[in-house]
Length: 374
Ligand SMILES: Cc1cc2nc3c(=O)[nH]c(=O)nc-3n(C[C@H](O)[C@H](O)[C@H](O)COP(=O)(O)O)c2cc1C
Image 1 (cartoon, helix red, strand yellow):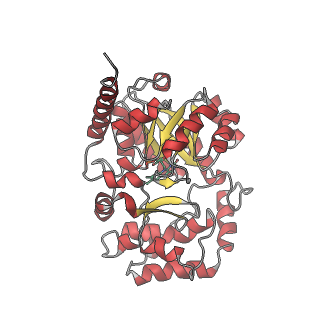
Image 2: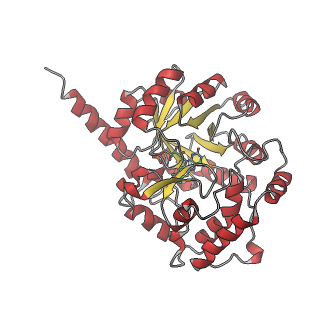
Image 3: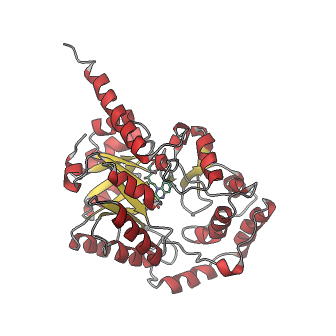
């Protein structure tokens, strides 16, 4: 499984792990994979703290940072994060705020104390992602930048390349992958609909080979629905240079996850996820709950676009996390995860997950080899 892409990054296994937890990033890179820190929820100052911590805990191993610069979003031209937030706040209809507030009140979720107020605009814009990129590029062990929700703008690609690093991006359609390649990206992450977080409509088994063929020789990482080494073998058999995983790292020992949320993930089956615009404004796979059902109802407001919907729902995300043990918090919490949630039934260490993937991969390859005539 030692692919050219592994070689270029100096890693042992072609296992890429997207996570918001610094402990998971370091543990994956230390176990021979490649940890990628999702920056979207961090202010530049917090991101600096996270990267510094990872630098100190990852030895000489490399890791990556993931940004979210959508191809299209409200307020795109504004590059000042403070002005952008003001401008967007004015565009939010009051009934959306009222509906969100009522859902939280009906579920008995306490309000955040006034001295703990938070920003509503996350890093889902060029204005907010640029300072995050500034931080990432100051850390030598960050060897890769990835971007979600679109082809990163040319100035971002140029900056990453000038710094001697590689840059790639996720996509869920062939034409998006071709756009990434034409923008000069070094690798492409093809994510099938099964995956957690923002995701398209085409299944991995159908999407991966089409994208691999369309962009070759650009390396493609297969994402969406991978939880076992046999699935990894399937991805590599189709020509992927590695796997890009997200969901399976939510239930590892090292993950920072409130116990009620961890319990929801461990109990859920593969039928319990839904693609919903109710939290971020773009279709995102998450656990179905009262919140996703309420916003899908014909009688209720339609979710706004990105990042407006996210600004409306930030209060829900913060409150359900701060008061995670409140009895009904999971009914209105944001639990992004893919269909592999039905295969995530116990808490394991990162090292055990990686060892499991590698051993299952070897078994799968042996099984195929055993089919060869003598
Ligand atoms: C909780 C969660 C949050 C995610 N957030 C992001 C994100 O901020 N940026 C990004 O590029 N991908 C994000 N993703 C998608 C992952 O990078 C990855 O492509 C996906 O999880 C792969 O499919 P899988 O969940 O079946 O492993 C997220 C996935 C999950 C499960």
